[in-house]
Amino acid sequence: MNRQRLLLTIVPALLIAAGAIVWAMFFRAIDVQVAHPERDVMVQVFGLGTVEARVTSQIGFKISGVLVDLRADVGDRVAKGAVLARLDDREQRAQVARAEAAVDQAEANLQRSTASVAKATATYGNAKRINERQQKLVKTNAASVEAAETAQATEDAALADLNLAKSDVLVAKAAISDAKAQEQQQTATLYFHTLAAPYDAMVTTRQKELGSALNAGQPVFTLIDPKSVWVLAYIDESKAGEIEVGEPADIVLRSHPNQRLKGQVVRIEPESDRVNEERKVEIAFDDIPAFANLGEQAEVYITTVHLPQTVLVPEAAIVGLGKNRGTVWTLEDGHLQQREVTFGHRLLDGRYEIVGGVPDKAAIVAKLRGGLRVGRAGKIAKGPAK
Image 1 (cartoon, rainbow, N blue to C red):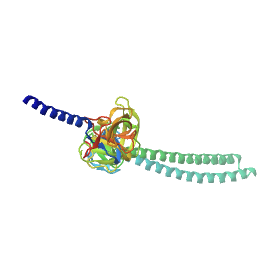
Image 2 (image 1 turned 180 degrees about the vertical axis):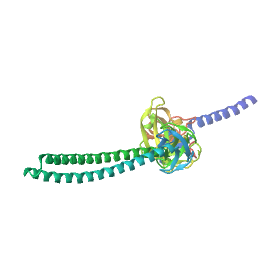
Image 3 (image 1 turned 30 degrees about the vertical axis):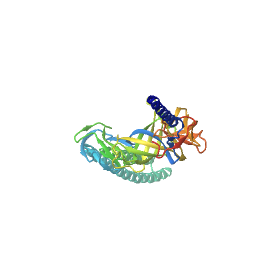
Image 4 (image 1 turned 45 degrees about the vertical axis):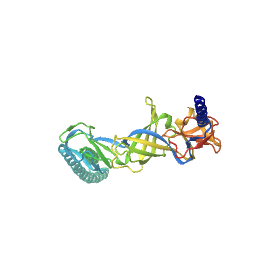
């Protein structure tokens, strides 16, 4: 009797408990976290790169010689035209002095030749007048034929001397031109003994020290234009097609991981890396930081699209994702449904933009959980989706 009473008490209790469990599992409204519309969403492309300088020059002397003067070191900023180094130029200065003396000598020869022309001109004029008189006298038999012939020969010789003197003037002028050309060449060679900065620059490397014997063209310094510092980034080909010149970018240097620097895309290389399947993209700083070091690793985040308003769903909440399509859970009129939707852009945090397939006023489930079933009652959980 007691056993029957116990059963009558326990069985209904178990049935009630089982019913409660069944109701909680299949009929009670389930709390779901949903994605809410977001404004001004930036779609970005990520890449890794290094800080580089667009303008980099290795400079040295055009001639060989011994390095006797160094005026710049690594880290120095130098103005355009500033003297950086000099070679021993004593021998070359002597060559310049000889060339200058040769110019003076050539000019003196020209003056002498010019004076000779004046003398020859006067002699020729006198001989011509004498010859003219002798030719008139011989016609009247007042002078002998021999005297007339002598006067003619004297005039001809004077004319030849005049022409020779004029030729000497031309030779002297040519000698002056040659001497001046030699002087310019020797002066230019002397100039090549001095190494000057070709532009406003910063010295990044000094390869030689005082006393070094240099060959022509051997680098002494490596210079960069500080205004040309940028980031050379490598972007996966699958994302590189979204990038255009002029798009804004955020730059994070490894030495300052908590600071985002502003920049923009200034060049997209036309040739990709065939092995790594990456494209080179150059990003210029809006304001070049003083702490940017060449070769330093940098992360770049290039903004390709601004979405004024959109709904984003995490990849973990998508079923059967492929070719910009997939299935998501939705909450429609208080009940759960599944919808195949179309996706647009993918954000760096793994969320996808939904561009089609969701009915109006439907909420998209942002986090999957147990108990999801088509048609089951649901309600929006409080708090943001995680």
